[in-house]
Image 1 (cartoon, rainbow, N blue to C red):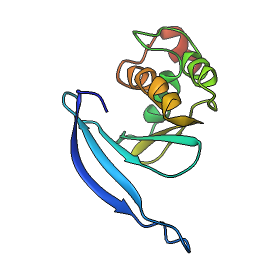
Image 2 (spheres, helix red, strand yellow; image 1 turned 90 degrees about the horizontal axis):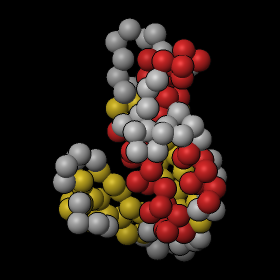
Image 3 (cartoon, rainbow, N blue to C red; image 1 turned 30 degrees about the vertical axis):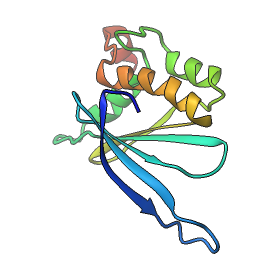
Image 4 (cartoon, rainbow, N blue to C red; image 1 turned 180 degrees about the vertical axis):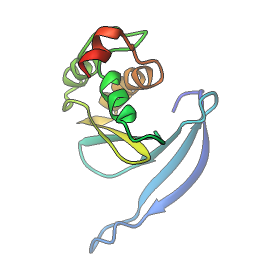
Length: 141
């Protein structure tokens, strides 16, 4: 983990499967944004990123779901529609996906290996923190 994160907690995850060992879990906190990154070291080639962000809404008119879609339209640093999926594909990953719930939005990525996740994560963070919200894209959503 980079110098931007501090280790907040370490524990073990018991999967409950017969003959399985507990998986080490580490929780890191970003020094500036206070985002928490939970790393669960599970054997195997795939690496899953799941980012849960609070998106409470009081009027239920679809604003969080619209924002979820706008995140995929680009960001200030990467102002290109579909850039996240291009980076995911380049890193042997599946296209990004997201789901909007009543009180949160969940962004998901699956790729091969930690390096894929490490390459995709900064792009995803920029899209989430600095989405490119333009009138043309907003109108189609």
